[in-house]
Length: 187
Image (cartoon, one colour):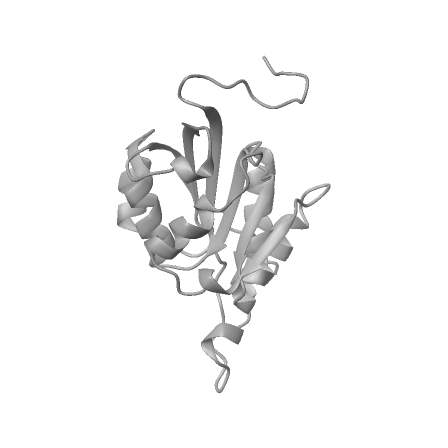
């Protein structure tokens, strides 16, 4: 049941919220290009749209996206979001580039309370460590999958309840999915 604003109902534990974590697609390593400016590799150009299609098919489209300013993250976002009818607002944040868990959590906790589903597009090892830090439990051995490898284009979905994004704390989320969408190579 929703109220007249269309928002999910609040419970004693708060509003259902979802954090979708997307590692940027496979990047290239051109000589002389600074790390921040590295583009996507051909595989990344195929996988980023596949990630967008996977999010749409699973009904996990965000209300807001936070994206690293690195070229490979920005391009991943653009190609993924192009798969949706209307892309949500995006904030490109320099602090997400090469961020560790404390910086990532700081960015997530600054998200407005009206956002129910947040997409975070960034880099490893920070994203993998964030998922492992936040997940108190999982579905279908998703934690084992993340611990084994969180490769490029990986998507982790964390569900939790809270009155505010400021409430998100270690061990409070349920890791409901971990997937690695791959685009088809054209012959």
